[in-house]
Image 1 (cartoon, one colour):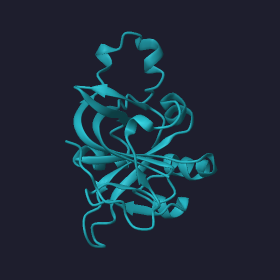
Image 2 (cartoon, one colour):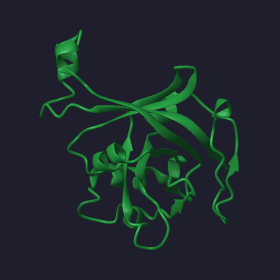
Image 3 (cartoon, one colour):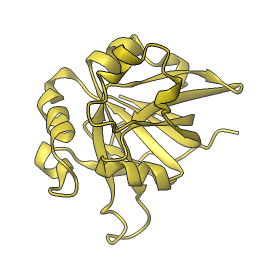
Image 4 (cartoon, helix red, strand yellow):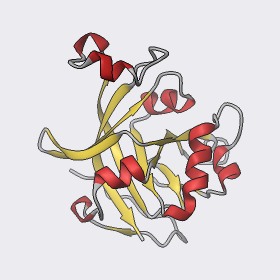
Length: 185
């Protein structure tokens, strides 16, 4: 059963069915990019800093195990990896093109070193289920993590072409989440 979570006041988001997600996921993810965000939004100011976000252009939307799902990939070297790996909830946030510089910053800088949201001019939004996203997002997909698996290079069928993406042998972990909420403007 899908969770229904209150939308934080002042965010102007409306809840919709994920099947109303606009545009091609190929364009929205691959060309437009998204922010993957996870951690513990929790209650109180001390928990609100226990999360991180990163820009991604690898992932997708589909159906698996009779569930609407989103999947994405995070390298273990990324600061966000630990947050996604340990959290039960993650979000995928999509923005208008005017936020390209903010997304670029969130992909180039590490949350180990700076407060990326603040530096990018993004305002965190905390949902009751622990999800974190941003007030400036156009679309927010909230996912409950249901599967994770490391990419195994021994299973590459076109190893030469795929290895070009892994100069440092820093293979991604695949995360699949059941879509439990979709918010849009």
